[in-house]
Amino acid sequence: MSVLVTGGAGYIGSHMVHALRDAGEEVLVLDDLSTGFRRLLPATATLVIGDVGDAKLVRSLLDANGVDSIIHFAGSIVVPESIEKPLFYYLNNTCSSRTLIQCAVEARVKHFIFSSTAAVYGIPDSVPVSERAPLNPISPYGSSKLMTELMLRDAARAHDLRYVALRYFNVAGADPRGRTGQSTSQATHLIKVALQAALGQKTYLEVFGTDYPTQDGTCVRDYIHVSDLISAHLAALKYLRAGGESQILNCGYGRGFSVLEVVEAVKGVTGLDFDIRLGPRRVGDPPRLVADTHCIKSKLDWGWKYDDLQLIVAHALSWERRPG
Image 1 (cartoon, rainbow, N blue to C red):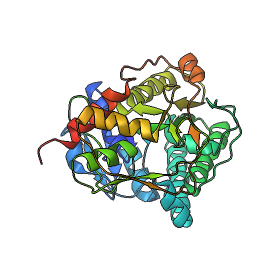
Image 2: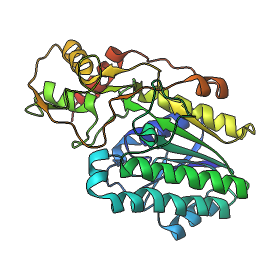
Image 3: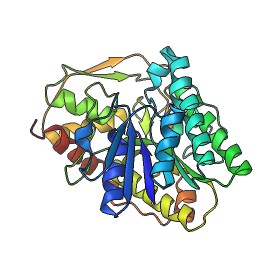
């Protein structure tokens, strides 16, 4: 049996592929390489270049490779872009996910792990936010992910399919062994962009909004190391294979840092100063997003190793400074 990883040549997906291969799993990667890179993958993983929304291709891959589990990362993830291009996000995220779920049901794939997001909460009434909080996304990105969660819920009720949807908070860092990291030059992740500014790859870092109701006026987020996020996926896969019921779980550490606190951490780790420009708020940015982690701790055999902002920054810095 094998695991299909969609979007497996991207930032988070490539970490997943390395972890699966480290665990001895047979891995099949489906990626259109629009934001992914073949070089991030281990040589022992099979890469198929294609669109997850191509039903004929997906079904043939599932049938030919004895896939028993799907881990679905493929999709678009930039909140401001989703506001500018909502129909593209509903096509690329929601419609393609619907095709993938249908193919999984038809091929009798029993286990499905979905890369969801804390953006489904919108602006939460209280923080930390639990999985029981109201779902009020304020961006097409968040809405497109929520729609996929609903499709999974309904498909699992009607068919022999069980799933875990993991609602990511802010993913950062890089593989501690230096095998993969955030490689898209136009990425919007704060730590990535701040490091680019520190290393002179960008002329400045813009901070969007300084009048939020937070300790220093900037947005607060729960930053989780990508390797800890991946270990949660491995735990979810183990859970489903052992017969676990479908779950929706937050993935974070349960504490937050403001944008300015992250900037200071980047300056401290790099020993470099860089230009900060204060700008207006962006549409779609909630003031605070911090995970309530009680549910994931109770449901999965998962514990994190890298809950340290300076360490997260240091691993990301090592990746940014790599040769070539």
